[in-house]
Amino acid sequence: MDPLPSAKADQLMMSLVYQNLISNAIKYSSKKEAPSIHIGSQQVNGEVVYFVKDNGAGFDMNFYEKLFGVFQRLHSESEFEGTGIGLATVNRIVQRHGGRIWAEGKIDEGSVFYFTLGN
Image 1: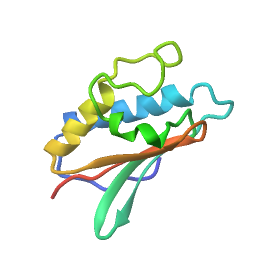
Image 2 (image 1 turned 180 degrees about the horizontal axis):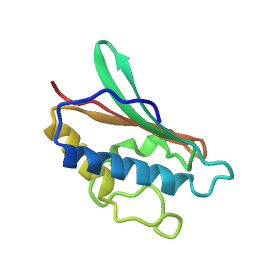
Image 3 (image 1 turned 90 degrees about the vertical axis):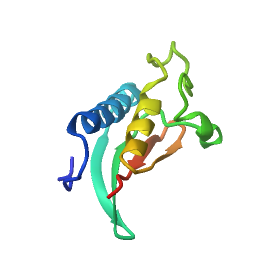
Image 4 (image 1 turned 30 degrees about the vertical axis):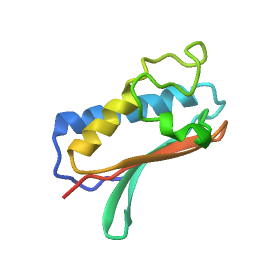
């Protein structure tokens, strides 16, 4: 985990964002021999972009539009447990903070979830 810059945000809501993103990273990396999760941030065009990256199951970018929907799953329940509301919750919290969220993934190579917060 890299040191993260402070942000003007609701602490409880941000803990839910990280709880969901990190628990997903752990869950989807759990079947890897050497799971790896990286939590950090970067400056992009004067904006702080926070991220959670893993080397887990990843996802097919062809189904990206389903990623942040309620009860939308890209992996079967038998493969990975879950309710299908975690990323929808994260999306809603980030939007309420004036930010945006997006992700990149590759099947069997992992994923990275990025988000920003408004000023």
